[in-house]
Image (tube, rainbow over all chains, first blue to last red; front, side, top):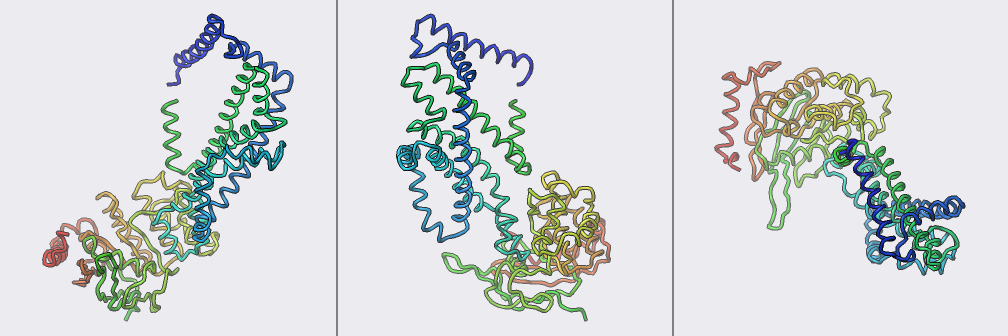
Amino acid sequence: MRNAKNVILSVLLFIGSIALWEAVVRGFDIPPFILPPPSQVGLALWRGFASGLYLQHLGHTLIETMLGFVVGSALGLVLGTLVALSRPVEFFLYPYIVMFQSLPKVALAPLIVVWFGLGLTSKVINAALIAFFPLLVNTMVGLRSADEERVSLMRSLAASERQIFWMLRLPNALPFVMAGLDVAMIFALIGAIVAEFVGAQKGLGMLIQSMNFNMDVSGQFSILLILSVVGLLLNRGVMVIRKRVLFWDPSEKERSEQERVSA
Amino acid sequence: MATEAISVQSLSKLYTTRDGGVAALERISFSVDEGEFVAVVGPSGCGKSTLLKILSGLLAPTAGSASLRGTPIVGPRRDIGVVFQAPVLFPWRTVLDNVLLPIDVQGLGRDRFMGAAMDLLALVGLREFERRYPWELSGGMQQRVAITRALIHDPAMLLMDEPFGALDAMTREHMNIELQRIWTERKKTVFFITHSIPEAVFLADRVLVMTPRPGRIVDDLRIELARPRTLDLMTTPEFGEYTRHIRGLFNVKGGLDA
Protein backbone atom coordinates (compact mmCIF):
# COMPACT_ATOMS: atom_id res chain seq x y z
CA MET A 1 0.00 0.00 0.00
CA ARG A 2 2.85 2.39 0.81
CA ASN A 3 3.82 3.71 -2.59
CA ALA A 4 4.38 7.31 -3.62
CA LYS A 5 0.95 7.64 -5.21
CA ASN A 6 -0.91 6.52 -2.11
CA VAL A 7 1.15 8.70 0.20
CA ILE A 8 0.34 11.75 -1.89
CA LEU A 9 -3.31 10.69 -2.01
CA SER A 10 -3.51 10.34 1.77
CA VAL A 11 -1.89 13.76 2.31
CA LEU A 12 -4.33 15.29 -0.16
CA LEU A 13 -7.23 13.61 1.63
CA PHE A 14 -6.08 15.07 4.94
CA ILE A 15 -5.67 18.59 3.51
CA GLY A 16 -8.99 18.25 1.73
CA SER A 17 -10.95 17.33 4.85
CA ILE A 18 -9.33 20.16 6.85
CA ALA A 19 -10.21 22.59 4.04
CA LEU A 20 -13.77 21.28 3.92
CA TRP A 21 -14.11 21.73 7.70
CA GLU A 22 -12.83 25.30 7.43
CA ALA A 23 -15.17 26.03 4.49
CA VAL A 24 -18.25 24.56 6.19
CA VAL A 25 -17.67 26.54 9.41
CA ARG A 26 -17.16 29.80 7.50
CA GLY A 27 -19.82 29.15 4.84
CA PHE A 28 -22.61 28.28 7.28
CA ASP A 29 -21.46 30.87 9.78
CA ILE A 30 -21.19 28.34 12.62
CA PRO A 31 -20.29 30.18 15.82
CA PRO A 32 -16.78 29.24 17.08
CA PHE A 33 -18.10 28.17 20.51
CA ILE A 34 -20.03 25.37 18.75
CA LEU A 35 -17.43 24.26 16.19
CA PRO A 36 -14.24 26.26 15.72
CA PRO A 37 -12.56 26.27 12.29
CA PRO A 38 -9.27 24.30 12.11
CA SER A 39 -7.34 27.55 11.68
CA GLN A 40 -8.43 28.64 15.16
CA VAL A 41 -7.63 25.23 16.65
CA GLY A 42 -4.16 25.50 15.13
CA LEU A 43 -3.78 28.97 16.53
CA ALA A 44 -4.83 27.82 20.02
CA LEU A 45 -2.35 24.95 19.80
CA TRP A 46 0.46 27.28 18.81
CA ARG A 47 -0.35 29.82 21.54
CA GLY A 48 -0.62 27.11 24.17
CA PHE A 49 2.79 25.69 23.36
CA ALA A 50 4.45 29.09 22.82
CA SER A 51 3.38 30.31 26.28
CA GLY A 52 4.62 27.09 27.89
CA LEU A 53 1.15 26.50 29.37
CA TYR A 54 0.45 23.24 27.50
CA LEU A 55 3.85 21.73 28.15
CA GLN A 56 3.53 22.31 31.88
CA HIS A 57 0.10 20.67 32.07
CA LEU A 58 1.05 17.94 29.62
CA GLY A 59 4.05 17.06 31.79
CA HIS A 60 1.81 16.82 34.83
CA THR A 61 -0.70 14.55 33.12
CA LEU A 62 2.10 12.37 31.76
CA ILE A 63 3.60 11.90 35.22
CA GLU A 64 0.21 10.91 36.63
CA THR A 65 -0.36 8.50 33.76
CA MET A 66 3.04 6.85 33.97
CA LEU A 67 2.97 6.52 37.77
CA GLY A 68 -0.56 5.13 37.63
CA PHE A 69 0.47 2.73 34.87
CA VAL A 70 3.50 1.45 36.78
CA VAL A 71 1.73 1.10 40.13
CA GLY A 72 -1.46 -0.38 38.64
CA SER A 73 0.25 -2.90 36.40
CA ALA A 74 2.74 -3.95 39.07
CA LEU A 75 -0.13 -4.62 41.48
CA GLY A 76 -2.09 -6.43 38.76
CA LEU A 77 0.92 -8.58 37.95
CA VAL A 78 1.56 -9.54 41.57
CA LEU A 79 -2.07 -10.17 42.48
CA GLY A 80 -2.72 -12.01 39.20
CA THR A 81 0.22 -14.29 40.00
CA LEU A 82 -1.07 -14.95 43.52
CA VAL A 83 -4.56 -15.76 42.27
CA ALA A 84 -3.17 -18.06 39.56
CA LEU A 85 -0.87 -19.92 41.94
CA SER A 86 -2.94 -20.20 45.08
CA ARG A 87 -6.35 -21.81 45.23
CA PRO A 88 -7.22 -20.22 48.62
CA VAL A 89 -6.33 -16.75 47.36
CA GLU A 90 -8.48 -17.34 44.31
CA PHE A 91 -11.38 -18.70 46.37
CA PHE A 92 -11.49 -15.82 48.83
CA LEU A 93 -10.46 -12.94 46.61
CA TYR A 94 -11.76 -13.67 43.16
CA PRO A 95 -15.48 -12.99 43.79
CA TYR A 96 -14.61 -9.46 44.94
CA ILE A 97 -12.30 -8.95 42.02
CA VAL A 98 -15.04 -9.94 39.57
CA MET A 99 -17.55 -7.72 41.35
CA PHE A 100 -15.16 -4.80 41.30
CA GLN A 101 -14.25 -5.39 37.71
CA SER A 102 -17.81 -5.15 36.45
CA LEU A 103 -18.07 -1.72 38.07
CA PRO A 104 -17.37 1.24 35.77
CA LYS A 105 -14.20 2.40 37.50
CA VAL A 106 -14.52 6.02 36.33
CA ALA A 107 -17.52 6.27 38.66
CA LEU A 108 -15.09 5.97 41.56
CA ALA A 109 -13.14 9.08 40.58
CA PRO A 110 -15.23 11.55 42.69
CA LEU A 111 -14.73 9.42 45.81
CA ILE A 112 -11.04 9.06 45.20
CA VAL A 113 -10.62 12.80 44.80
CA VAL A 114 -12.51 13.34 48.09
CA TRP A 115 -10.29 10.81 49.85
CA PHE A 116 -6.93 11.74 48.38
CA GLY A 117 -7.27 15.44 47.57
CA LEU A 118 -6.82 17.61 44.52
CA GLY A 119 -3.12 16.82 44.07
CA LEU A 120 -1.11 14.15 42.29
CA THR A 121 -2.03 11.23 44.58
CA SER A 122 -5.70 10.97 43.67
CA LYS A 123 -4.86 11.02 39.93
CA VAL A 124 -2.23 8.33 40.25
CA ILE A 125 -4.57 6.16 42.31
CA ASN A 126 -7.40 6.55 39.84
CA ALA A 127 -5.12 5.78 36.89
CA ALA A 128 -3.65 2.77 38.72
CA LEU A 129 -7.10 1.45 39.60
CA ILE A 130 -8.15 1.34 35.98
CA ALA A 131 -4.80 0.06 34.67
CA PHE A 132 -4.85 -2.72 37.28
CA PHE A 133 -7.54 -5.00 35.84
CA PRO A 134 -6.22 -5.82 32.38
CA LEU A 135 -2.94 -6.87 34.01
CA LEU A 136 -4.63 -8.91 36.71
CA VAL A 137 -6.84 -10.86 34.33
CA ASN A 138 -4.18 -11.39 31.66
CA THR A 139 -1.50 -12.48 34.12
CA MET A 140 -3.93 -14.97 35.63
CA VAL A 141 -4.96 -16.44 32.29
CA GLY A 142 -1.39 -16.40 30.98
CA LEU A 143 0.07 -18.28 33.93
CA ARG A 144 -2.62 -20.92 33.68
CA SER A 145 -2.36 -21.44 29.95
CA ALA A 146 0.93 -23.35 29.99
CA ASP A 147 0.76 -26.22 27.53
CA GLU A 148 0.06 -29.56 29.28
CA GLU A 149 2.81 -31.33 27.32
CA ARG A 150 5.38 -28.77 28.39
CA VAL A 151 4.34 -29.21 32.01
CA SER A 152 4.68 -32.98 31.58
CA LEU A 153 8.16 -32.50 30.15
CA MET A 154 9.20 -30.40 33.14
CA ARG A 155 7.73 -32.96 35.53
CA SER A 156 9.52 -35.82 33.74
CA LEU A 157 12.75 -33.91 34.41
CA ALA A 158 11.84 -33.93 38.11
CA ALA A 159 11.45 -30.14 38.11
CA SER A 160 10.05 -28.49 41.24
CA GLU A 161 6.88 -26.36 41.11
CA ARG A 162 9.09 -23.31 41.56
CA GLN A 163 11.19 -24.27 38.54
CA ILE A 164 8.08 -24.94 36.47
CA PHE A 165 6.91 -21.45 37.38
CA TRP A 166 10.13 -19.62 36.51
CA MET A 167 11.19 -21.65 33.50
CA LEU A 168 7.81 -22.36 31.94
CA ARG A 169 4.73 -20.61 33.30
CA LEU A 170 6.17 -17.12 33.54
CA PRO A 171 7.76 -16.88 30.06
CA ASN A 172 4.64 -18.57 28.71
CA ALA A 173 2.49 -15.83 30.29
CA LEU A 174 4.50 -12.98 28.75
CA PRO A 175 2.41 -12.58 25.58
CA PHE A 176 -0.68 -12.21 27.79
CA VAL A 177 1.07 -9.78 30.13
CA MET A 178 2.25 -7.65 27.22
CA ALA A 179 -1.27 -7.53 25.78
CA GLY A 180 -2.44 -6.40 29.23
CA LEU A 181 0.20 -3.66 29.34
CA ASP A 182 -0.96 -2.48 25.93
CA VAL A 183 -4.47 -1.87 27.26
CA ALA A 184 -3.32 -0.66 30.69
CA MET A 185 -1.29 2.17 29.16
CA ILE A 186 -4.33 3.76 27.50
CA PHE A 187 -6.50 3.00 30.53
CA ALA A 188 -4.04 4.84 32.78
CA LEU A 189 -4.33 7.94 30.60
CA ILE A 190 -8.13 7.77 30.77
CA GLY A 191 -7.97 7.35 34.55
CA ALA A 192 -5.71 10.37 34.99
CA ILE A 193 -7.85 12.63 32.76
CA VAL A 194 -11.11 11.60 34.43
CA ALA A 195 -9.70 12.29 37.88
CA GLU A 196 -8.53 15.68 36.66
CA PHE A 197 -12.05 16.42 35.45
CA VAL A 198 -13.39 15.80 38.93
CA GLY A 199 -10.97 18.10 40.65
CA ALA A 200 -7.39 19.13 40.03
CA GLN A 201 -5.06 22.11 40.00
CA LYS A 202 -2.93 21.01 37.06
CA GLY A 203 -3.10 18.73 34.02
CA LEU A 204 -4.67 18.61 30.58
CA GLY A 205 -7.99 17.29 31.91
CA MET A 206 -8.26 20.21 34.28
CA LEU A 207 -7.37 22.54 31.41
CA ILE A 208 -10.18 21.10 29.25
CA GLN A 209 -12.57 21.61 32.15
CA SER A 210 -11.62 25.27 32.68
CA MET A 211 -11.70 25.98 28.93
CA ASN A 212 -15.18 24.50 28.87
CA PHE A 213 -16.32 27.00 31.50
CA ASN A 214 -14.85 29.82 29.40
CA MET A 215 -16.47 28.53 26.19
CA ASP A 216 -12.97 28.18 24.69
CA VAL A 217 -13.93 25.41 22.28
CA SER A 218 -10.92 25.77 19.99
CA GLY A 219 -8.67 25.38 23.04
CA GLN A 220 -10.50 22.16 23.93
CA PHE A 221 -10.06 20.88 20.42
CA SER A 222 -6.35 21.63 20.56
CA ILE A 223 -6.01 19.61 23.78
CA LEU A 224 -8.01 16.70 22.38
CA LEU A 225 -5.52 16.71 19.53
CA ILE A 226 -2.62 16.57 22.00
CA LEU A 227 -4.27 13.75 23.95
CA SER A 228 -4.81 11.60 20.89
CA VAL A 229 -1.18 12.05 19.85
CA VAL A 230 -0.02 11.23 23.41
CA GLY A 231 -2.21 8.12 23.49
CA LEU A 232 -0.81 7.00 20.16
CA LEU A 233 2.80 7.52 21.27
CA LEU A 234 2.30 5.71 24.59
CA ASN A 235 0.72 2.80 22.75
CA ARG A 236 3.58 2.69 20.24
CA GLY A 237 6.05 2.70 23.12
CA VAL A 238 4.48 -0.40 24.64
CA MET A 239 4.42 -2.05 21.21
CA VAL A 240 8.15 -1.46 20.73
CA ILE A 241 8.89 -3.13 24.08
CA ARG A 242 6.52 -5.96 23.26
CA LYS A 243 8.24 -6.70 19.96
CA ARG A 244 11.58 -6.92 21.74
CA VAL A 245 10.34 -9.13 24.56
CA LEU A 246 8.16 -11.40 22.43
CA PHE A 247 10.45 -11.95 19.46
CA TRP A 248 9.71 -15.67 19.81
CA ASP A 249 5.92 -15.50 19.94
CA PRO A 250 4.29 -16.85 16.75
CA SER A 251 1.27 -14.53 17.10
CA GLU A 252 3.68 -11.61 17.27
CA LYS A 253 5.32 -12.67 14.03
CA GLU A 254 1.92 -12.97 12.38
CA ARG A 255 1.06 -9.53 13.62
CA SER A 256 4.19 -7.91 12.24
CA GLU A 257 3.73 -9.79 8.98
CA GLN A 258 0.20 -8.49 8.75
CA GLU A 259 1.46 -5.01 9.44
CA ARG A 260 4.01 -5.43 6.73
CA VAL A 261 1.35 -6.61 4.32
CA SER A 262 -1.06 -3.82 5.14
CA ALA A 263 1.65 -1.15 5.31
CA MET B 1 23.84 -62.21 32.36
CA ALA B 2 22.99 -58.56 31.70
CA THR B 3 21.37 -56.47 34.42
CA GLU B 4 17.74 -55.52 34.08
CA ALA B 5 17.16 -51.94 33.01
CA ILE B 6 13.39 -52.15 33.25
CA SER B 7 11.45 -54.67 35.23
CA VAL B 8 7.65 -54.66 35.21
CA GLN B 9 5.58 -57.11 37.22
CA SER B 10 1.83 -57.65 36.80
CA LEU B 11 1.31 -53.95 36.31
CA SER B 12 -2.30 -52.70 36.02
CA LYS B 13 -3.78 -49.29 35.44
CA LEU B 14 -7.47 -48.61 35.79
CA TYR B 15 -8.96 -45.31 34.72
CA THR B 16 -12.19 -44.53 36.52
CA THR B 17 -14.86 -43.11 34.29
CA ARG B 18 -18.50 -42.21 34.85
CA ASP B 19 -19.70 -45.64 33.75
CA GLY B 20 -17.21 -47.64 35.78
CA GLY B 21 -13.55 -48.28 35.04
CA VAL B 22 -11.47 -48.79 31.93
CA ALA B 23 -8.49 -51.09 32.19
CA ALA B 24 -5.72 -49.33 30.26
CA LEU B 25 -3.22 -51.98 31.35
CA GLU B 26 -4.01 -55.40 32.71
CA ARG B 27 -1.36 -57.38 34.58
CA ILE B 28 1.52 -56.62 32.28
CA SER B 29 4.91 -58.20 32.93
CA PHE B 30 8.16 -57.89 31.02
CA SER B 31 11.76 -56.90 31.48
CA VAL B 32 14.31 -55.05 29.40
CA ASP B 33 18.04 -55.70 29.57
CA GLU B 34 20.63 -52.98 29.92
CA GLY B 35 21.58 -51.66 26.48
CA GLU B 36 18.64 -53.34 24.76
CA PHE B 37 16.39 -51.60 22.21
CA VAL B 38 12.80 -52.62 22.90
CA ALA B 39 9.84 -51.40 20.88
CA VAL B 40 6.20 -51.60 21.96
CA VAL B 41 3.77 -51.72 19.08
CA GLY B 42 0.00 -51.54 19.21
CA PRO B 43 -2.99 -49.62 17.91
CA SER B 44 -4.09 -46.41 19.57
CA GLY B 45 -5.83 -46.95 22.88
CA CYS B 46 -3.91 -50.11 23.75
CA GLY B 47 -2.38 -48.45 26.80
CA LYS B 48 1.16 -48.09 25.49
CA SER B 49 1.33 -44.38 26.31
CA THR B 50 -0.02 -45.12 29.78
CA LEU B 51 2.79 -47.64 30.19
CA LEU B 52 5.38 -45.04 29.23
CA LYS B 53 3.88 -42.46 31.59
CA ILE B 54 4.14 -44.96 34.44
CA LEU B 55 7.76 -45.76 33.55
CA SER B 56 8.67 -42.06 33.41
CA GLY B 57 7.07 -41.54 36.82
CA LEU B 58 4.32 -39.20 35.62
CA LEU B 59 1.52 -41.62 36.48
CA ALA B 60 1.06 -44.06 39.35
CA PRO B 61 -0.07 -47.62 38.54
CA THR B 62 -3.24 -49.04 40.10
CA ALA B 63 -1.54 -52.33 40.97
CA GLY B 64 1.70 -54.16 40.37
CA SER B 65 5.24 -52.88 40.42
CA ALA B 66 7.72 -51.33 38.04
CA SER B 67 11.36 -50.62 38.64
CA LEU B 68 14.18 -49.07 36.68
CA ARG B 69 17.69 -50.41 37.17
CA GLY B 70 16.74 -52.18 40.34
CA THR B 71 14.96 -49.31 42.13
CA PRO B 72 11.15 -49.02 42.20
CA ILE B 73 9.60 -46.07 40.36
CA VAL B 74 8.04 -43.62 42.80
CA GLY B 75 8.11 -40.45 40.71
CA PRO B 76 10.03 -38.69 37.95
CA ARG B 77 13.70 -39.47 38.08
CA ARG B 78 16.84 -37.99 36.65
CA ASP B 79 18.60 -41.01 35.20
CA ILE B 80 16.19 -41.31 32.26
CA GLY B 81 15.53 -39.20 29.18
CA VAL B 82 12.02 -38.88 27.77
CA VAL B 83 11.06 -38.00 24.18
CA PHE B 84 7.41 -37.26 23.47
CA GLN B 85 5.44 -37.40 20.24
CA ALA B 86 5.68 -33.61 19.86
CA PRO B 87 9.12 -32.02 20.22
CA VAL B 88 7.81 -29.85 23.14
CA LEU B 89 10.49 -27.20 22.77
CA PHE B 90 10.31 -23.84 24.53
CA PRO B 91 10.02 -21.16 21.84
CA TRP B 92 11.81 -18.52 23.94
CA ARG B 93 14.92 -20.70 24.23
CA THR B 94 17.48 -21.22 21.47
CA VAL B 95 18.26 -24.74 20.28
CA LEU B 96 21.24 -24.88 22.64
CA ASP B 97 19.21 -23.55 25.59
CA ASN B 98 16.48 -26.10 24.88
CA VAL B 99 19.06 -28.88 24.87
CA LEU B 100 20.45 -27.61 28.20
CA LEU B 101 17.02 -27.49 29.87
CA PRO B 102 17.56 -30.69 31.89
CA ILE B 103 20.92 -29.30 33.04
CA ASP B 104 19.23 -26.08 34.20
CA VAL B 105 16.43 -27.97 35.96
CA GLN B 106 18.82 -30.33 37.70
CA GLY B 107 21.26 -27.56 38.52
CA LEU B 108 24.23 -29.41 37.08
CA GLY B 109 26.10 -26.34 35.83
CA ARG B 110 26.01 -25.42 32.16
CA ASP B 111 29.76 -25.06 31.74
CA ARG B 112 30.45 -28.72 32.26
CA PHE B 113 27.84 -29.76 29.69
CA MET B 114 28.51 -27.22 26.95
CA GLY B 115 30.96 -29.55 25.20
CA ALA B 116 28.59 -32.50 25.48
CA ALA B 117 25.76 -30.41 24.05
CA MET B 118 27.80 -29.41 21.03
CA ASP B 119 28.94 -33.01 20.47
CA LEU B 120 25.36 -34.27 20.64
CA LEU B 121 24.12 -31.56 18.28
CA ALA B 122 26.83 -32.61 15.86
CA LEU B 123 25.78 -36.25 16.29
CA VAL B 124 22.20 -35.47 15.23
CA GLY B 125 23.40 -33.19 12.43
CA LEU B 126 22.44 -29.88 14.00
CA ARG B 127 25.85 -28.29 14.34
CA GLU B 128 25.64 -24.57 13.51
CA PHE B 129 21.98 -24.48 14.46
CA GLU B 130 22.61 -24.00 18.19
CA ARG B 131 21.78 -20.28 18.16
CA ARG B 132 18.59 -20.71 16.15
CA TYR B 133 15.11 -20.74 17.64
CA PRO B 134 12.77 -23.74 17.34
CA TRP B 135 10.41 -22.00 14.91
CA GLU B 136 13.29 -21.65 12.46
CA LEU B 137 13.64 -25.44 12.23
CA SER B 138 11.67 -28.11 10.36
CA GLY B 139 9.62 -30.72 12.25
CA GLY B 140 12.32 -33.37 11.86
CA MET B 141 15.01 -31.00 13.11
CA GLN B 142 12.87 -30.03 16.11
CA GLN B 143 12.44 -33.68 17.05
CA ARG B 144 16.20 -34.15 16.80
CA VAL B 145 16.61 -31.27 19.25
CA ALA B 146 14.20 -33.09 21.57
CA ILE B 147 16.28 -36.28 21.31
CA THR B 148 19.45 -34.30 22.04
CA ARG B 149 17.73 -32.79 25.08
CA ALA B 150 16.83 -36.27 26.32
CA LEU B 151 20.46 -37.38 25.99
CA ILE B 152 22.23 -34.33 27.43
CA HIS B 153 22.45 -35.43 31.05
CA ASP B 154 23.75 -38.81 29.87
CA PRO B 155 20.84 -40.89 31.14
CA ALA B 156 21.20 -44.65 31.15
CA MET B 157 17.85 -45.04 29.43
CA LEU B 158 15.68 -43.34 26.79
CA LEU B 159 11.89 -43.57 26.91
CA MET B 160 10.36 -42.57 23.59
CA ASP B 161 6.62 -42.13 23.05
CA GLU B 162 5.91 -42.29 19.31
CA PRO B 163 8.68 -39.75 18.71
CA PHE B 164 8.36 -39.82 14.91
CA GLY B 165 4.60 -40.19 14.71
CA ALA B 166 4.04 -36.60 13.65
CA LEU B 167 6.64 -36.62 10.88
CA ASP B 168 6.09 -37.31 7.19
CA ALA B 169 7.01 -40.77 5.89
CA MET B 170 10.35 -39.81 4.35
CA THR B 171 11.58 -37.78 7.33
CA ARG B 172 10.47 -40.66 9.50
CA GLU B 173 12.61 -43.21 7.65
CA HIS B 174 15.54 -40.86 7.86
CA MET B 175 15.02 -40.39 11.61
CA ASN B 176 14.87 -44.17 12.09
CA ILE B 177 18.32 -44.49 10.50
CA GLU B 178 19.57 -41.60 12.66
CA LEU B 179 18.20 -43.12 15.84
CA GLN B 180 19.79 -46.48 15.05
CA ARG B 181 23.11 -44.69 14.54
CA ILE B 182 22.79 -42.73 17.80
CA TRP B 183 21.84 -45.90 19.63
CA THR B 184 24.84 -47.82 18.24
CA GLU B 185 27.16 -44.99 19.22
CA ARG B 186 25.75 -44.31 22.69
CA LYS B 187 24.59 -47.79 23.71
CA LYS B 188 21.63 -46.61 25.81
CA THR B 189 18.70 -48.75 26.76
CA VAL B 190 15.85 -47.57 24.56
CA PHE B 191 12.17 -48.17 25.27
CA PHE B 192 10.37 -47.10 22.13
CA ILE B 193 6.63 -46.84 21.66
CA THR B 194 5.11 -46.77 18.18
CA HIS B 195 2.00 -47.72 16.25
CA SER B 196 4.03 -48.54 13.14
CA ILE B 197 4.86 -52.22 12.80
CA PRO B 198 7.72 -51.74 10.26
CA GLU B 199 9.25 -49.04 12.46
CA ALA B 200 9.23 -51.36 15.46
CA VAL B 201 10.76 -54.27 13.53
CA PHE B 202 13.33 -52.02 11.86
CA LEU B 203 14.60 -50.47 15.10
CA ALA B 204 14.25 -53.00 17.87
CA ASP B 205 16.06 -55.98 19.30
CA ARG B 206 12.74 -57.06 20.74
CA VAL B 207 9.17 -56.09 19.94
CA LEU B 208 6.41 -56.25 22.54
CA VAL B 209 3.00 -56.48 20.87
CA MET B 210 0.07 -54.93 22.74
CA THR B 211 -3.68 -55.16 22.14
CA PRO B 212 -6.31 -52.88 23.66
CA ARG B 213 -9.25 -53.20 26.04
CA PRO B 214 -7.74 -54.34 28.29
CA GLY B 215 -4.17 -53.39 27.42
CA ARG B 216 -2.15 -56.62 27.33
CA ILE B 217 1.11 -57.86 25.91
CA VAL B 218 0.26 -60.68 23.50
CA ASP B 219 3.70 -61.39 22.11
CA ASP B 220 7.36 -60.78 22.89
CA LEU B 221 9.27 -61.16 19.66
CA ARG B 222 13.04 -61.18 19.23
CA ILE B 223 14.13 -59.56 15.96
CA GLU B 224 17.14 -61.42 14.63
CA LEU B 225 18.18 -59.03 11.87
CA ALA B 226 21.81 -58.00 11.51
CA ARG B 227 22.84 -54.41 12.25
CA PRO B 228 23.35 -51.82 10.96
CA ARG B 229 19.99 -52.21 9.30
CA THR B 230 19.33 -50.32 6.09
CA LEU B 231 16.10 -49.25 4.44
CA ASP B 232 16.64 -51.96 1.81
CA LEU B 233 16.20 -54.48 4.59
CA MET B 234 12.54 -53.53 4.73
CA THR B 235 11.90 -55.21 1.39
CA THR B 236 13.53 -58.54 2.33
CA PRO B 237 11.43 -61.68 3.04
CA GLU B 238 12.77 -61.95 6.63
CA PHE B 239 11.57 -58.45 7.43
CA GLY B 240 8.21 -59.20 5.81
CA GLU B 241 7.97 -62.36 7.88
CA TYR B 242 8.19 -60.38 11.14
CA THR B 243 5.71 -57.67 10.11
CA ARG B 244 3.24 -60.25 8.79
CA HIS B 245 3.44 -62.17 12.05
CA ILE B 246 2.71 -59.05 14.12
CA ARG B 247 -0.09 -57.89 11.85
CA GLY B 248 -1.60 -61.37 12.14
CA LEU B 249 -1.75 -61.00 15.93
CA PHE B 250 -3.79 -57.81 15.58
CA ASN B 251 -6.18 -59.41 13.11
CA VAL B 252 -6.86 -62.32 15.45
CA LYS B 253 -7.43 -60.00 18.41
CA GLY B 254 -9.40 -57.47 16.34
CA GLY B 255 -7.05 -54.72 17.41
CA LEU B 256 -6.70 -53.07 14.04
CA ASP B 257 -10.32 -52.32 13.35
CA ALA B 258 -10.39 -50.08 16.42
